[in-house]
Image (cartoon, rainbow, N blue to C red; front, side):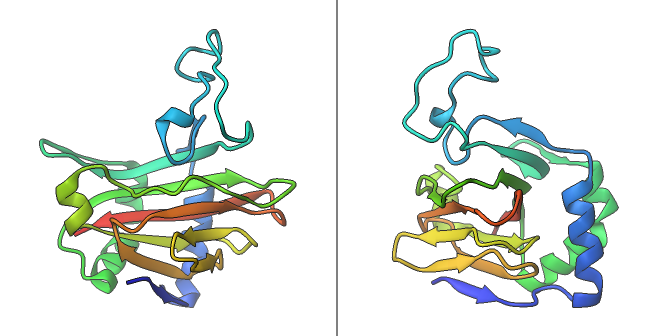
Length: 188
């Protein structure tokens, strides 16, 4: 079930949090968006062994890992510590029992709208069945999230869409802004 919540965080506080999330110096470039197989080798092979991939060359993103859990350990970044008040608020609002991944993705505007690859946020069968995905849009633009059932949720600042992790979805690149920012949340 796909559920959209407008004005997810208190409006008077959301702007400062969103700006901090977008400007904090924690982004790493990725030469893929949905699957590592989309990589052309720009990063992994230092560009020495570029391969042709069946996606737009411009389909890249910058990603900031905020929190990550695996079976043996967890990673929490300085941004997670600095913004713990908002993380705790989101924990309460989403009724989170356990965070698995919190990351911020930034994609670059395109000349024409492009729907990325449909994917789920985990390949682990247990997590796919038990985890939820939520996307908090940090800025407004004409990009968004496309679901395989035809549902489209446009990127609108402080709007959150949540759904079972096993729900295939794809990012839609914007054409009216230079940057599209989303906070991707995976949790039980």
